Length: 461
Image (cartoon, rainbow, N blue to C red; front, side, top):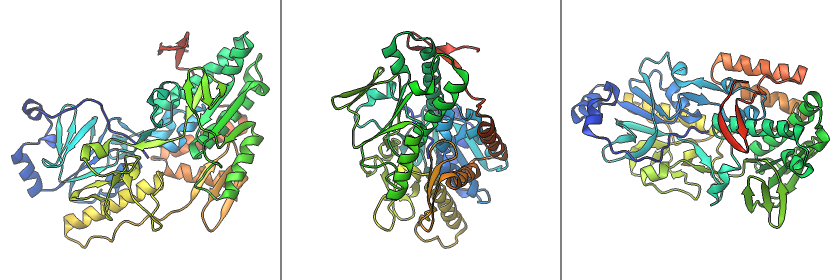
């Protein structure tokens, strides 16, 4: 999970820039020596699940913690699809990083975009400054992957940031509004067709949520269009949905989606995307709303570190999650290539990143205090969860497999427990209960409008 700290602009840092830095970022040799003699400086790049877990677990460590992120909030990405389908508001799944770390007096938060890492100087390079480190944790997450067709991003947004989710929400709601007044039958069909590419948990959850939004909202709030006019298509190149789950649960998920009216297309690949739809080989599906949930790639960390990496860009690390040849640099979460006992890469999910963050906190505490280091990192897999619309889900815990309402309740409890901050947990629980009882959502607001297909500035509605 996945807070990228990236920027396309290069920065090398200047003497003038260093003179104007706050004390925490003073990169002068004297300051570096003094810092090392006093307390070590642990720099964490990325405030996603891994980076934030490490920062919180380092609370009682005799060290200065610096957390760098390009956004000032921690985001709970697994629930972004609910923001995209107007089930939750962005504030329900995000919390300010400074607020989360306010009780840690030695933890400092820095807003900035990382453009590189200087391993020889032991500095993180931002656009306008350099930040020295004694220990570095890179937890910059993942980004969308379009398999060599980056131009598809303009018409098929994924779900990695709040901006992505609000953009998808806007597209869905505007399509419904336009369909209500559209007189051309072919254009109305395009407006009422929603395509989700990718049959993993995000794609399955997104397709189910759109299906329920269309079914319930169209019936209650619109007059000219109705649920039967909507078409939701889920496209998966593999032979089944949720490939990380047992086949039985994959089949249950497929049947649940089909009961919601989702058209599941397996074993087919998207060969083209544009603002009018997608092509599956020679077949074309017209749609004004395409959501990408088919692939991810690691952040540019491998380039910053000039390190070996896999085809997804994940950095190869040692057993203690450190960079080969650099025992003071660590890479975790979606940015790292870590294998389980069977030799398979660990999945890019929140529990992996959180466990790795906590492990590094123990490792660094041991190094700083002179205690024996813990053994190599070992991931303890708790299970897989995916929801399919309202009150249906699948859950695989190995020793037990759940479906239906029970799985949905477990899924909800687990996700609420992962939210940072009591306020967020209460808000999400209340919103879910309210939507369940009343079939209404308080987040169906179009905060920006489109004119002739182009997005305009925000408007008050």
